[in-house]
Structure formats: structure tokens, C-alpha cells
Length: 288
Picture (cartoon, helix red, strand yellow):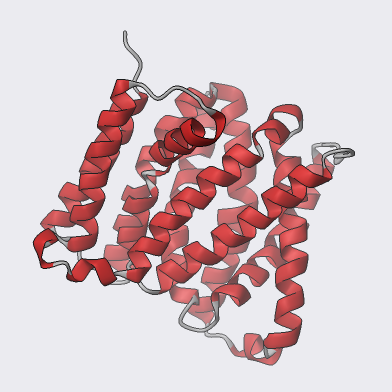
């Protein structure tokens, strides 16, 4: 149990820090290039982990689901990375925390799953919190409506929810680590194909050390190892207990972004972020 908690804690820290690393890399490459390089680093390591754990990669008859999941995931990464380019890592971490509520809404619209009263209240509170985050408390000024980065990050919460719904049956019937690899592979082929035509690969040989470290972190730690650690942690403590650790993700982002990128963390960011976290907790808590 202690090992499981350590793995889950490392996972959410890696995911939280990934927004900061993404911000660093986007000063030197496009979102498509960052996606491709992450895939190049992550997929071989994931394949090694799958081989060591002797996980089967048999997805016969599920090609359509894999293709759909891969297309949504590619769009998700592109939208999120483009959004991060135009907003702060701090805002990204707090906005992404609303994903479970977005998932509940889309499950209601697509799968006709029931949405309870607590979920509706949580959605209202989270919406107000996000408005405070994006507007920095100046809701009536309306200038915040042009904050493209924040809106794209919010859109990426929806694409991740769509991806989760689209691959739900796959992850239930197959090993989630294998699902991750098989879905990432077509996206990687597509993105790397675009890079072969549009990118000057020689520029990647002259990246600053800071960017190289950030890129290695994104590909190895935040993608390959984090997915592995998450699956190991969930298998030991269960999905419900593992989900509690996700509340720490925006805190990890904020801690590193404020300290390393000198991003501001004002009172309205704090209030808005806490409202989002409270809304997610309130909507997901069970009656005792």
C-alpha cells in the first residue's frame, strides 16, 4: 500500500509538472513538434514496460475504437499544448481539475447516464471558479472573453473526457497500459509524418539544456512512467482511492510554476482554484 501511494503521488506530481515543462518547450518548438518528440521518447519505453510485464497487444476486431481514440487523443494534445502556449501553467493546472465534472456532463449527453443533484451543484460552483480564474476577478470587464489560451485548455478538458468515454470499453476489456500504447501509436505516426514535411529536424540538435531536460521529462516521466505508475497504483488501491490523489495535481503545477517560471498566484486564482477543487470533491463524494 505504501508503494502504491508513492507511485500515485509521483504520477500526479509528474502530470502537474508537465504543464510547466510544456511551457518551457513551446518557446522553442510548435505544439505538433512537441507532440511528436514526446511520442518518440515515450513509445519505446512503454513497449519495454509492456514486454517486461508480458502484456498482450491483441486488439483484433477493435480497430475502429482504437482509431477513434487515437484521433481524439491527438486532437486533445494539440488543443491543450496550443492553449498552454497562450496562458500560464498555473491556470492550466487549475482549469484541468474540472475534467471529472466535464466527464459527468458528457456521459449524460452521450451515454444517457444519470446526473445527480450534487453533480449539478458541483458544475455550477466549478463554472464560477473557472470564471474567476480566467477573468482574475474582473468578470464584468469582459476582456477575459478573449483569453484564448484559457478557453483552449478548458476545451482540452472536454476532449480528454471524450477520449475517456470513447475508450471506456477498450480499457475495461484490455490492459490499460496496452490500450495507451496502441492508441498512441497511430497518433505518433500521423504527427511524425507531418513533422517530416514541415519541421527542420536539425534545430532539435541545438536545443538549450533546459529544454532538453523538460522534453525528456515530458516523454519519459510524464507520459511513459506516469501511465505505468498510475495503472500500478490503481490496481493496488482501487480507482476511487487513486482518484483522490488527482486533487494534488494543480498544487504540484502551481508550486513549480510560481517558483520556476515566476508566475503570479493572486487571490482570485486561489479562490477560483479552490472552488474548482471543492466542486469536484462535492460532486464525487459519497453519502456516508
